[in-house]
Image 1 (cartoon, rainbow, N blue to C red):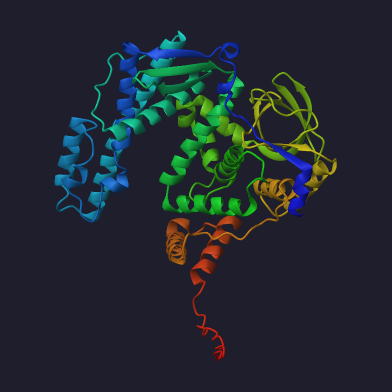
Image 2: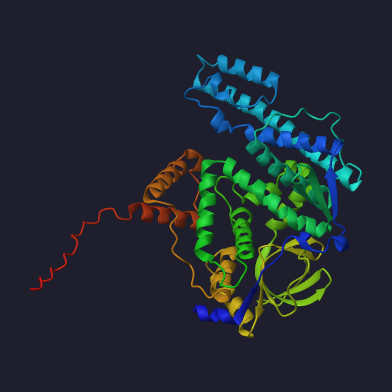
Length: 480
């Protein structure tokens, strides 16, 4: 399809946060954090600063040269733990590899327990602060004594404030059905903006935090998981394109990012986990106990599906979408405020089963007001055709790129920044797959394609005979 075909569609940006709306009509409140409230916020910021300063286990320990100096720059999470860890390190001078490994596992478990306590206390303080602001009963007991503050540089404090704001938003949505936004006045006084939201909209906003946790798991589980994550991102980028001129680039980039995370974290089964990252969380009873709403969302994502829909009815926040492929209709809670699309519009994206017959829609969904009647039919046909050979999420992305935006896909995309990077990544990937742990593992088409692209990029330019540069004929000198 030529780019001229774009003229028949209008891409509408989606506003996912309702905070720009009229404050009075939505019940937004502004709270000055002074006195005890200021002290609670400072304790939250200190907890975030402490967690951010602790290096990763890989950075803290070097098995080839294990000694107490590895911990010199680590903050004192707990003095007793620190002394115990120093003793453990001192006892390893003449230890075997097996004993070193066992001691390291024990030390990391102790570190994890200590950091887990800091994290739990920080979230409990966030819960206490929000409950005080909203005049709500605490769902869990509040800490009796505030932890002591720790000194932070200006840069570290700014980073800790950002992390504190992130945690406050998450806790507000997960436990209070409230959007909470932290801000600092020019005079240095902190303020909290709170906005009540529906239970359904709170779940939609929590998707950001669920994906954040899933990304952390993907980075921490195994080196192969990191590469599998890179492979997903590369494959998705081959089917995804930027919107046409005139569309909101910020909104479009946001929705593309959401759809990529859905494919990579919710849909793709990873070799290291035997499931998708979100699927692993959906089956985790411990995760369900700690984060019930996140767990509900993980299960909803595990049962989600993508399609091209037509909006056939609007009734307040309740929207009826009809599949353009099979005609099935779905009741959907619309979190956009105000709703900026109407009946007859085409909606391409993901629906998540929520409660009974009600669905939530993904913030990655796009909305198109068709100028002619062929768009829905073309999109349905393209989705059926691409779906025969592609995972549903990639097939949908191909529809958005080719039918809606008018750009041919898939596109050629290099999997690594340079040939050297491609060779290094491919060698590391092959070494991991050769490990007996993955003897029975079979790479999926995405990982196979990623490896093939790495090999092609790594070999590019090799073995080609150098060609002499063509010599330009000299022009005869003009006689004067």
